[in-house]
Structures are given as structure tokens and as C-alpha cells.
Image 1 (tube, rainbow, N blue to C red):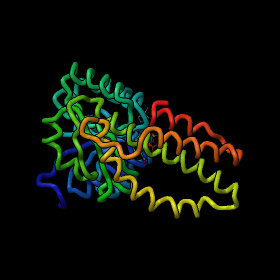
Image 2: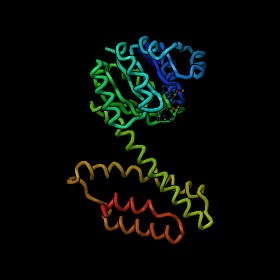
Image 3: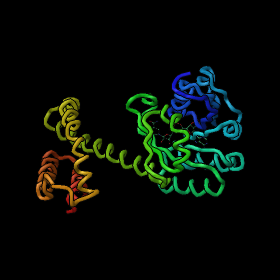
Image 4: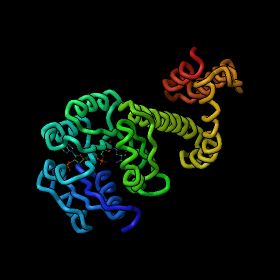
Length: 272
Ligand code: FVH
């Protein structure tokens, strides 16, 4: 047995790419893993690795100290969890399905009404990263249950608890994803502009990656300016930032590429 002080009975509901990776990490940690997936064939590889395949979601849930859900969306979670309310009473459920904060809070109200301990989690990793050093999962909700199950949850990667508000983990999740998509959008726009000069997206990527890696650390300073503005000495004025974005916008116009992105950036960063 690796990594676990005591083997637990853990069920994983949902064996898509992510649920399969989570179940594998639990097996590697030495736990007794019961799995269920709507399409049974997706459980075969895990069965060969030692997981027990349940006939139904209810059977998987009733076999476990800890129930982990990782299905497509909130509707799929509800479809599986609501009919199982009676047998989940007194158990801990960790929902690693991506949902909105309000969907997580609503599930929390259902859990409280049915005496289920609920932890919500946002996975900041792709399936192949699970269990590796760069994997992060953000949790919120039932704090005592989180502490009790921390050693199991750490099998997936770094486990960061952000508060008892069940919507908090999802809010961090969507905020980090938002930063990622904003970066992707700006890169795509820049690549279109560079290609208009005969350059390539590949060359732009090679030059951009080290710059962004160095500049990303400035988010820590910017966070001070947002959390406690009185403690922050702004390095770049709003006027400077607005002028810089206007210049980029002008370059986009000159290259005949779309400029939607820069207006939104200007409004978000400078208010104007
Ligand atoms: N894959 C990733 O990189 C991301 C990383 C961040 C977190 N997400 C979220 O994880 C959830 C599951 O994602 P996934 O990658 O495992 O997704 P799929 O491979 O498409 O598998 C979907 C599973 O959901 C099952 N499912 C769908 N609807 C239902 C339902 N009504 N009842 C029960 N299960 C359902 C589906 O079953 P089947 O189609 O095989 O029968 C799969 O097991 C997701 O929230 C991501 O946002 C992953």
C-alpha cells in the first residue's frame, strides 16, 4: 500500500477521463475503490487494476466511507445523487464535477436537508496530471470532513481548502479558468496580427512564454492593490495602461484584425 495510513472504502461515480484518473490515484494509494459509470464498458480498465465495479450508482455509494462524484455537469450530479438521499445520510460526498458557485451552494442546501456532509471541489489539472506535482484541487464546504479526508484528497494533488461557503471552490475555479481563457484569447489575437506580417504563431509562442512566465509573478503584487489598496503603490498608472492598450488596439486596426478584446481589457483594467 502506498501513501495511505489506513485503506478506506471509496466510491467514484463517473468514469470519464477525469473520474478514471481519480480512481487510478485512489487505487495507487492503496484504497478499496468501488466504481460506477453510466456506460459500463468504461469501467473495464479500472476493474483490471483492482477496482470493484458496482451494478448501480446506489450500490457504489452505499459501499463507501467517502463518495466522489465526477460527472459531466450539475444536472448529471443531481440525477445520480437525489434518488440516493437515504443511503447517503451520514456519509461524506466530494463533488469534483465542474459547476457554478450557485449550483454548488444549491447542492449544499440539498445535502444539509438530507444530512449529507458535502465538500465541493474544483480540479485545476488535466487527467494525466492527477497525482503529480502540478495538480491542484480547490475545496470548500464541510471543513471537518475535509480535514478527516485530507490524506485521501491529497492523492489527487495539492488540496487547498478555501472556506466553508460551498460556492467558494467553484468561484476560485472559474476565476482561474477565466484568467487562462483571457490569456488564450489575447495570444490568438496576437498570432493573427503577427501572421499578417509574415511571422508565425509558433515563433510568437516561443517569445511570449518566457515573458508571461516572468510577468505572472506580478499578480501577487496586484492582489495587494485589490485586497488592501491602501498598502499598494501602483507601478503603472491607469493612464499609462489605457494608452498602451489603445496602441495595441490601433495596431490591430492597422492589421485588419478584430479589436473586440482590447476595449474589454481597457474597461476592466482602467475603468474607462
Ligand atoms: N478533463 C479535464 O481536463 C477537466 C479538468 C477540470 C475538471 N473537469 C471536469 O470534470 C468533470 C468530468 O470531466 P471528464 O473529463 O471526466 O468528462 P468526460 O470524459 O466527458 O466524462 C463525463 C462523465 O460524465 C458521465 N455522465 C454524463 N451525464 C451523466 C448522467 N446524466 N448520469 C451519470 N453520468 C453521466 C459520463 O458517463 P458516460 O457518458 O460514460 O455514460 C462520463 O462518465 C466535468 O465536470 C469537467 O468539467 C475535467
